Image (cartoon, rainbow, N blue to C red):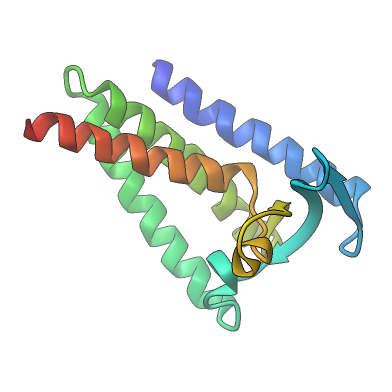
Amino acid sequence: MLFLFLTGIIFIVEYYIKKHMDRVRTLDEQRPLVHGTIILKKYYNTGAAGNFLSAHPDWMKRMHAVMFGAVSCIFILTLQKKRQFLAKTGLSFLTGAGMSNLHDRLVKGHVVDYVSFGCGPQWFRRLVFNMADFFVFAGIILCAAQIMIEED
């Protein structure tokens, strides 16, 4: 039950952050934080990371839905297993984040991103993320850690 709750919390919090960004920020506005290291800016992404496949938003919706379905099935099957705390947490992150971004794609036709970084290489500075993206990265790391622990 804890893991389903975590999934729901990620979706709900991200939903309201994106709603807030849509309501109070314009697409041209940038708000530097932490001496310009973090930059709040609203961006509508019809593709994947780095605008990959942005010219094909319908194909991106289908691909996202299929991946979300696969991750959700794995999550449900993993919930029934004993232990597997890292995998269950990681899959909670992936499911909640995936649901948030899929919801955006299906309802709005794009994903609302709102965080970029003013440090690092130029290619990295051009990327814009949302909280769900960070949960996807963390979920992948946790699932990989669970696999490595089991292999030892």
